[in-house]
Amino acid sequence: SQTIHQWPATLVQPVGSPLSLECTVEGTSNPNLYWYRQAAGRGLQLLFYSVGIGQISSEVPQNLSASRPQDRQFILSSKKLLLSDSGFYLCAWRGTQYNEQFFGPGTRLTVL
Amino acid sequence: LAKTTQPISMDSYEGQEVNITCSHNNIATNDYITWYQQFPSQGPRFIIQGYKTKVTNEVASLFIPADRKSSTLSLPRVSLSDTAVYYCLVGMIYNQGGKLIFGQGTELSVKP
Image 1: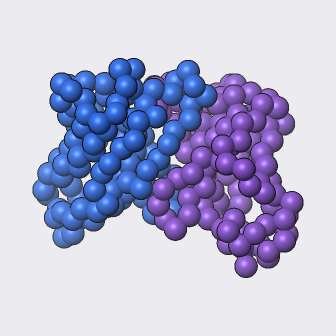
Image 2: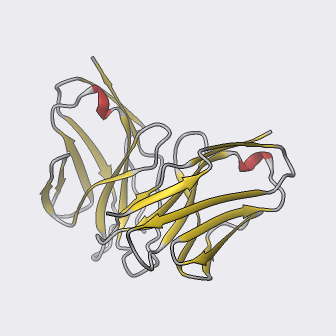
């Protein structure tokens, strides 16, 4: 069966520090992968998606970036965090039904 | 993706049937209607999807009238564990990179 992992689960970082969040998927090959952010507990915002290795589409211009170095690995990064980057970051992969996505456990990021 | 409108919050009691209605007046011919459930500090979970009439699975039922301009998610005999945010999404993103657009959702609170 397919599983999705994210780490770390929680992270507290100072403003201006770098960020690296990792997402890995098991049990599937060549998945479409997605990064979302959820602030204030509601309304997910799509940040990036990838249809294959090295292919990244950005949905929202900001100080975050994404990379897909391997088929089942998706990384979210920042060179300098802002206070507004705080939130719950979720990675997902697309299932077989039309609008189906499977989400990981998420990373709670607090920028101080 | 079509815009959706759903109530911000709903209250219910254990054992009752809960119906959450979503309006999507601008639904396109190829659009599917999809519902996700999200518990606190977890990623959303796909629960049901339909195109027209009625769809039922082990979790919920989805009722879609002939004009498809609205849909109703029905949760039979809710329990405290059904307390969550429920998102209605409309679109057909299978061949569009798989992007999902989440609105604010309906926060369902089930009381004993």
